[in-house]
Length: 120
Image (tube, helix red, strand yellow):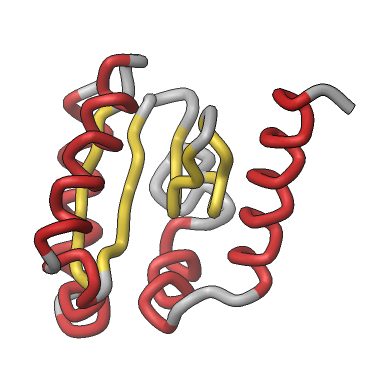
């Protein structure tokens, strides 16, 4: 197997593992956005190049990320910024929520996602 194929395979395997072991916030949000409940199809833990995104609507080019406490650490903030820049350079729009927002303010989260979907 070529190096590229091995990277792609490892990324796919990691995404598969993450789909089997979602966080509480990911489970809660997935329950609300799956099966076209917001009018578009979302995929969860989907590989985009070398990255795995929490949720993505490919038809609307919208990525939803759910961030836990580690995303507040300086190194993770820098990584997330580079990752976001790379994904945005491919035409994707990103929206980020914290675990706490998903758990405590689902209406706000869904309203924000709907706004982003309508903005195209």
